[in-house]
Length: 346
Length: 82
Image 1 (spheres, rainbow over the protein chains, first blue to last red):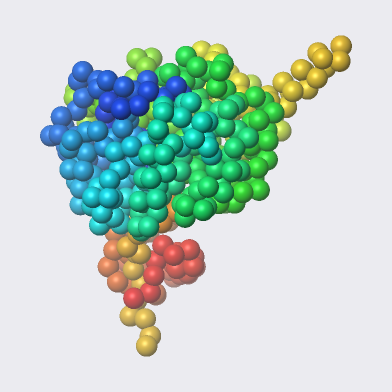
Image 2: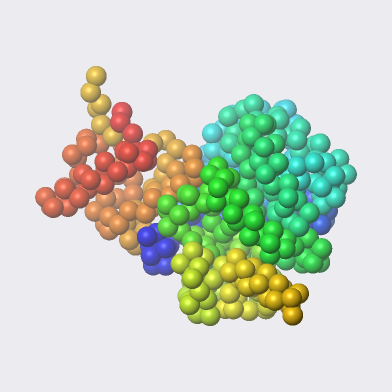
């Protein structure tokens, strides 16, 4: 299947996450990049536009813009326009609080825009406990503005122990608003690491979510390379981590990493101020190690063909070892629950 | 009226990879990995082509395989008839 071709090595990523700013007007407790104040050394407009040209030359199909809050950056629409002029699809992850009717009208004039609005609960209290007071209402208002346009819009939810029971209701909410639902894994990076124990879903919740996801054909998950439904993922035959193979991450200051959840010195692939995008993609040692990564300890697992060892970022953050397999994988959820039951009855 | 030919859909792009062509459709987004080797350049379907039209030098057996491939691309919406 497609894994075979991916493992042969791609000349450039299919898509990449570009965190255009660290600045954010919110302080979400699960934020993967601890956003808030802007980074000291963020790419200038000229540097950002040069990067767009490099990505175009490399053949990158899609850029997933995140942050921080991308719309805080004054030149963000200029960066988008440069992408669109080169036929690059842009997917914007926003908290929705800065979305206005005028902005929506400008975005809707281009067919190469998709937007994900973050919302972390089906009800105000659950969402605002993570994202801040008033954010639920602002996000819903943004989704309503976007839903009447042709812009493909989704509600993006990070699964936590507090909203796990609300995911079906969030699906209903998204459907009632005329948009789709995308659910992302909560990972222990950024402020998410600080609040990991308070927010992490239980093994039972993860298994229940997996079961529900399999029955909910139109719900997408966004792990690693694309937002895909369970059926699409199966049909495409892509079920391995896409970091450094199909995707990568560019930080606000122009440093490249395997993925957005591994933005530390240990995983830095290069600096776009000193090397070109293509040079870093082709030659970075850390990318080579991800391309060669095989989770041998998982190879005997019955689920290995479905996940190939899961998410290296979760393995790193929880066990400091990307070779050890995903400690939060579904198989480990099953064994954890069984162990807990045995302990309780012993 | 009969279609004049086939062309890459405006929502789709293609690029050359070691195995052949990688197609991307922003309507999903979707990907299609095609083990075409170097038989077709990435920009081949950027202009309108006849259904049986292939680069000069393509052998009969290659043409047969490429015809099946074009049918698949049409069915999946990466190509459309003009």
